[in-house]
Length: 482
Image 1 (cartoon, rainbow, N blue to C red):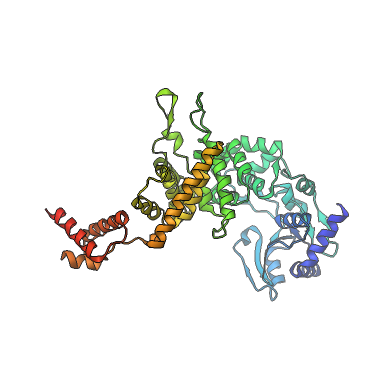
Image 2 (cartoon, rainbow, N blue to C red; image 1 turned 90 degrees about the vertical axis):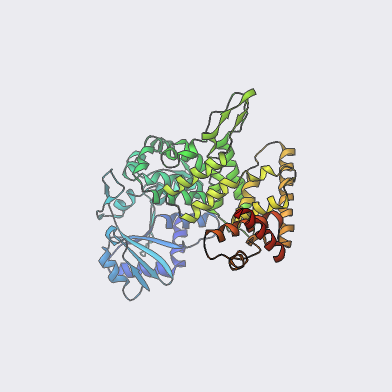
């Protein structure tokens, strides 16, 4: 192990009072204790970037059994939790640091689920060999020697930005197929390139991903999308066939292009839209970043195209109503992946609305149409702006500039109307009580119908004086009652 690395880990432990005291307490009791996994990986990466940083969550392994760990923490840790104790893990809050301490394990898998048959390991090597990738199979002793243990070449792989497994990739992924999705995430998160044998194993074992619960799949997919540059990871996700199993609508975007090239490569277009949406998101100081809803919408906004592609006369290709079909597909797939109702509905609505702007032409929309655009988008309007702008992937610079200028004009019109009216909260000019009093009716469906009429009128004509609103309501009621 290079002397520079030894110095780095020595300083890392010294920078953390929690790690220093952990080492002293466990050593005094006769136990080994090591910083391990992502904690070592991230610390080494931070050192490579010029500043050693103690990871936020500390992952520690030891030969002490869970009950012995609890004894050693008693009176020192602020709190402990035992949710993972069946798997040998004790969680603790020590001095404001979150620490997970796991007994050496040498698990076996039943190959039908990803649930391991928990078995205590006899050595640190037993524990490291069962880990997912070599870059996560390094350990630093918290004892006096501060020894670095790297039996599978994780440091070299980290320096080479290479992703390998401690044992054979086939065995590792067959044991736990979720590791294949973790491989995808690490491409985005760490900028690693999977070794050829890793890609081969992912491709041959992709079908095993069906063993993983939707919640686990969703977590890894979201973590991937929330990285700074997820494109290469998503390309791996699709090319290995993993997407076919858990997000087939994304794979389906790789439609065969007709010989006359009458439509874009929708798959490549969608990845480019995602890239551009991320750029706009990062450039907006008022936007929360990373934005999972925007990124899902950018990736999936065109998933209705394969089902709606039609070959028209003179070699043309159409995708009529693909936004409607796409919104339904988005809702179905994200529900299957157990995304929250709020995320599902937001992504589906953005998918449904992403084509609306193309009816704007060169500014032909009436104020009523602008109001409806804003009202239909609601609090998703800032995201819709980014999605629509990102959806322009033409290489024709003149056309791209024209589209951007046209959308600028729409945003300017929205701003002008917003100054004149409260577009964010468009309501009828009369409330329910006034409607009942004017029409002489009690609560019921008639009031709801009248409210919707007045809201449509408000969108069409803008704010009305109460007298004008009442006159319009009475005329509508008389016609309805005739």
